[in-house]
Image 1 (cartoon, helix red, strand yellow):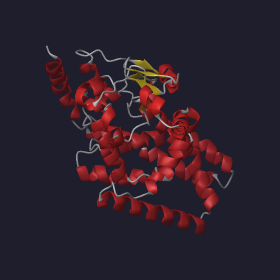
Image 2: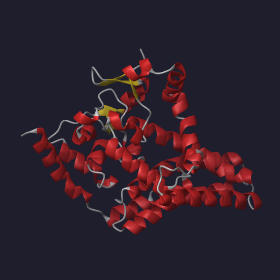
Image 3: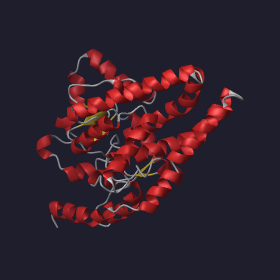
Image 4: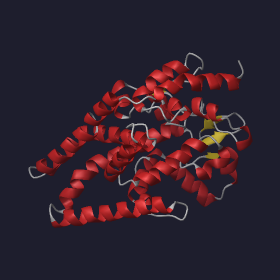
Length: 327
C-alpha cells in the first residue's frame, strides 16, 4: 500500500466519527458552561464576605473555564451542535468570557489548520512563533532578543496570552473581512459597556476580582496547550513543495497520554493529530478515531513530562528534521 493509499484509507475509516451526538452535547454543556456560570455567580456573593473567597472558588472554576474553551473550539469548527446557527451563537456567547471575537478566532484557527507544518506559510498560520536554525543565525540582534523572550516559558505563559486576549483581539485589521472587523468592534462595545455597567453598580474592584483569578491562569493553560500541539522534538515542518497534509497532521500534531482529568478539562485536545487530520470530528469522538488510526499508522505517544521539557526546544533543525534548543 502506498502512502497515498494509506492516508486515503485512514481518512475513510475515521469519517464516521464526524457524527454528532445530542446526548454528548448536553453532557458537555452541563459539565462546562453551566457549572462555570454557577461558580462565577457564587464568587459574586462570596466577595462580600472576603475577596479571597472569590480566589478560592476560582480554583474549580478554572477547570470549567478551560473546558468552555474546548466547547468554543468545537463551535468554531461547527462540530458541537448539528445546526450551524446554534454553533455560532454559542461560540459568540462563550467568546465574551474570553474577550475573544468568535469570527476572528474561527478564521485564524481555520488558517492554522490549512497551513500548520508548512514553513513557507508561517505568515498565514497564527501559531507559536517558530524560526529555523539558519533563519535565527541570520536574523538581526533585536529580533533574536524578541524571539528568545517570546520562547521563554516565563513570558510565553504570562505576558503573551494576556497581550493576545486582552489587547490584540481588540484591534480590527485590513487583513480581516468586514464581517470579522464588525465582530471585533461589537465585542469591544460590549466589553466597554460591561465595564461601565460594573463601575456604576457592583464596582470595578469586585468585577476584576471575579475575573482575574480565573482568566489569568485560564489563559496560561490555553497558551500551554497550544504550545504542546506542534512544538515537540519529532514534529513535522516542511517547505511548500514537499509538504504533505496527512504527515503534518499525524506526525506534526501531537498525541499526549494525559491524565484523565486533564483530558476531560481540555476536551481531548491531547488527540490533536486526529483533530488536524479531520477537524469535523467532535471532541467526544477523538479517542475512538485515534484507536482506528493506530491500527494502520504508528502515532508517536508523548507524556506530560515530555511536554514540559519541550519548552527547552526553540528552533527547527531542517537538516535533522527535529526541534532543537538554542546552541
